[in-house]
Each structure stands twice: as structure tokens, then as C-alpha cells.
Amino acid sequence: MKPIHLLAAVILSMSGLAFSAGGHDHGHEHKPLHGGVVREVKDMDYELVAKPDSIQLYLRDHGKPADITKGSAKLTVLSGNQKQEINLIPDGERFLAKGTFAIAPSAKAVAQVSMGGPAVTVRFVLK
Image (cartoon, rainbow, N blue to C red; front, side, top):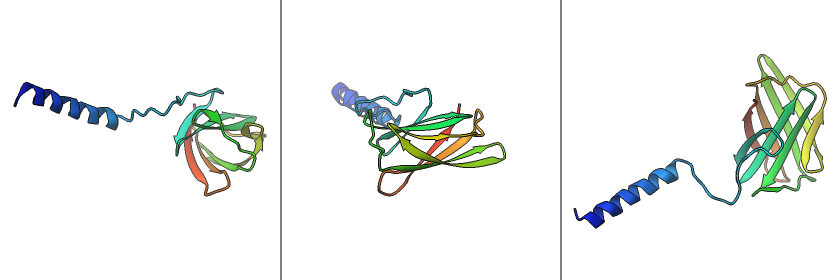
């Protein structure tokens, strides 16, 4: 094999590895802006901030706050043997619920979020 063909083959095989590693560039990072846990589903970032007295869910569309005024969200929290279902209401740029919640490290939460269409399921593991 000629050196140029060998080099091309190596470059081609490496580009496939980089793609399969999950790297994607779409102009924004998936870092928490409010101290919560961030997950991306269908190009939308969902940040869950869960505290024992309040639950907040922020949505970002390509790095910008999403319009949630006509949306709805429900959160199911599984902590140990407890299961809590929480309805979140739009509150400015976030969905919000206040009350008493079973929030513990490693608890699992599943959000069902609808923005006028079919609901999207987002899964979180709390810190």
C-alpha cells in the first residue's frame, strides 16, 4: 500500500471513532445553568433542579430558554421505596412545584413534558 493510501485509511478510520464517541457540535454546551442535572432529548436541554421544598425544570432550545407558557410537565420521583408524582406549572422561564418532596442523592426522576405536541420523556439521576 502506498504511504498516501495508508495515511488516508488511518484518517478515515479515526474520523469514524471520533463520531461514534458521541462528539457533536451544535453551538451550545450541556452545562447546568441553575445548579441542576442536565439531559438532552431531541435537541432540547432539560435541567432539573430538585430540592426538598421545590422542583424546577428549565428547558433550553439550542442554548436559549424555551417558551413554556403553553406547556405542561409532570415529574415522577423514585427515592428508595417512595414514589412521588408531581405536577409542575409554567412559572416564567421554568416549570415549578413547591411543597415537600422526597429528594435524595441517587434518586431517579422521570419528566413527561409536553409543549403542545406529544410528550417527551426525560430521565434524570439526582446528585
